[in-house]
Image (cartoon, rainbow, N blue to C red; front, top):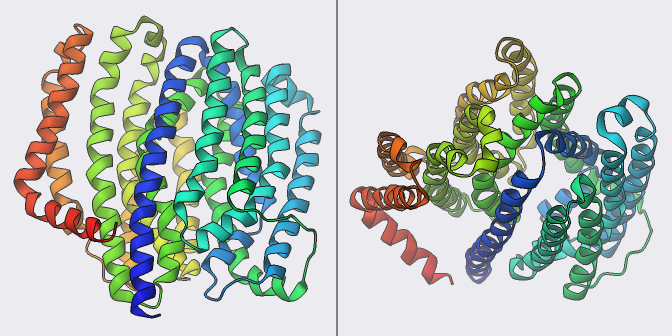
Length: 482
C-alpha cells in the first residue's frame, strides 16, 4: 500500500466519521423526538407488542444473509462483477424464503393471540422489507469499499425522515401500533430509490460457484458470530416476551430502547467506518493501532457523559412530564442498561477490529462465552427480580468485556486506559454533582435544564483541565485530514 493510498484512507475515514456523526445526530434527533411522542401516546402494552415483533425480525435477519456482504467489504482484492451478482442473488433468494417463513409464523394461533391483528400486520410489513432491502446491498458494498461514506449516509437520512415522519403523524392522530406498518413500507421504498440514484447497480440474478466459494469461508464465520449475538440478545428477549406479562416486557423494552440512544449515536456511528477502514489497514499495524485508539478515545469522550446524564436526569423527567410517570417502574432497568452500555462502547469496537483484520475465530470464542453466560445468568435473576433481572444480568455480564481488551492486545498493542481515564474521572465527578442536586432537578423545567447544562459544563471543565493538551492534539490531527 503506497503512502498516497494510506493518506487517502485516513482522509476519507476522518471525513466519513464526521459525515456519519452529523447523520447520526440528525437521525437520533429525529428518533428521540419520535420516542418522546410515542412514549406519550403509546401504552406499555403497545411498546411490548412492537418489542416482540422487532425481536422476531432481528432474530430472523440472520437467515437473510450468510455474511457475503461482510466478506466483500473485508476482501483484500477488488470484488468482481460476478462477486456482486452472487452476493445479491444469494441474499435475495434467502430474503424471499424468509418472508415466506414470516408469513407462516403469522398464522400461528399463539402468536396471533399475543400480538393481535395489528401486531401481525407490523410483523408482515417488516417481513416484506427484507427482500426490498437486498436491492440496496451491492450499491452499499461499492460505496463502503471506496470509503465513500458521504454518499452512504444519504439513504439512511431519507429513510429515517420518512419513517419517523409517518410514525409521528399517524400516532398523533390515534392510529396506534398500525402506524408502524405504513412507516416501515415507506422507509423501505425510499431507501431503494435514494441508493440507486447515488450509486446505480442493476440487480441481476446469477450465482457463480467460484465467487461463492471464495466469499463463503469468511462469510459463514462472520454470520455465525452474528447468529450467536442474536441468540444472546434477540432470541432470549423473544422468549422473555413469551413468558413475561406484556406490561413487564414493555417496561423492559422501553428501558433498553432508551438506553441504546447514546450507543447508536457514538459506537454504531464509528463502527460503520471502522470495519471497512481497518480492513484496508490490516497490513499496517502501527496505523491500525493509532486508528483503534483514536476511535476509543472519541467514543468514550461522548458516550460516558451522555450515559451519566441520562441516568441522573431520567427520574426528574418522569416527575415533570405527567405522561411519562407510567414509566417509573422501568427506571432501575434503564440505569443498569445504560451502565452496561459503557462497557459495550469499549468492547464492541475492539471486537469489530478483530473481525476487520480477519481474526474471526477469536471473536467467535468471545460470542460463545457471552451467549452462554447470558442464557445461564439471566433466568436466575429474572426469577428473583422479575423484569429488572434482565438489566441486572446485562450489567454484571458487561464487566467480562475486559476479555476483548486482553484479546486485541495479542494482535495490536493498543492502550485502552490511556484513552479513557480522563473521560472516566470527569464522568464520575459529573455523576456525583448530578446526584447531589437530584431533588432540585424535579422542581421545575427551569431547574431541570439548569441542572443538565451545569452537569455537562462540569464534565467539560474537568476533562479539559486534566486532558486539555491531549484533546487539542487529537483535534489538530483530525483537522489535518479533513
